[in-house]
Image (cartoon, rainbow, N blue to C red; front, top):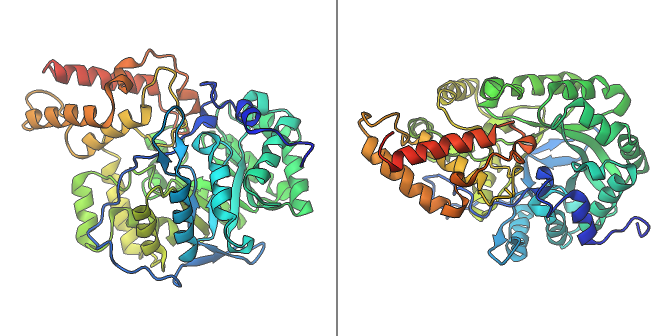
Length: 463
């Protein structure tokens, strides 16, 4: 460990943090996530002994169906870079563990390089056998593709997480960037995948897998080599909208039905990310939200998505980035215990997905992989405001629309409230430093410029 130790400044430099260039190493935490929408009383007791668990077929260990995604830890407003709110993080972790959550997923890239450190502090206050740590080989920047640099990232994860072993180790986001070419440069040509396999044999890694975004050729190649690498688990994006519509929403994405099916037939457990599509499935169009709540007034809109993900028997755990205590409490109610969806309820959700796909929203998951923008634009906030207005019917096609005046005012007032003027889309110059790092392959400058044109037409009353 000592031989490979690097200080925090050098580690962040190698990841690219602070350079404004390496988008995936610059993911931030969301301190202003949407609140939970639910008609239930916040005072409803949550049982501490009713968590649903799934069995890891390799180890026989029980893993909580709710996993804690540590990508959006709460922050304290401060000067310069955001500062994580360690006291609140500790409370969230304590509450989660008290209610049976035992899977915590982080990365050297999350929260601008701070997530592993904060997660390590919070978890180390509990006995090591009370939780499983998942982290990633997040060697996105070309300067980290050497064997030595990648090994430094791995050893730094052990140090930051205050542990001598990683329970679930992932190759981070295979398929992104330049597809197979980048995958081989990050993991194969430098021998890092072989190194991680050796670490698994030595017991310092208990389970080895990968998370997938983007190029399906890479996913298929990895599974075709399952006999060689013996993947213990795979992390995929799965929700009731992406089950059949992922490719329709974005040609580079792959439908969840295919991804899950390929894992299921090989007996590889699935870890689920984006069950809410970055919050989009908790902020669905108003008439769809009304139908969901009409069927079960006591459940939140978000709970439908979490129950959907957990209903699949091949799912080991479902990750949720729970920034606020109400996020955590709502998800605990969904999984303590999990009541699987019926076939009829699944069919109902697929009907809702068929309706949702007709809405012209931007497929932003609020992952912040595009941030920070060198020109100060709050890219996710701009896209999320636009999507919210689309879902609420507040994007009028023209001045002749019956609700034009109401929609115009709501869009403009809401835009100024949710995105400071200096961080709005009008400041985009089209440098395109953001798009290459977007897991959803959004043409971000194109969308920002389109939204800005719409905003200008509203201001001039010409829409």
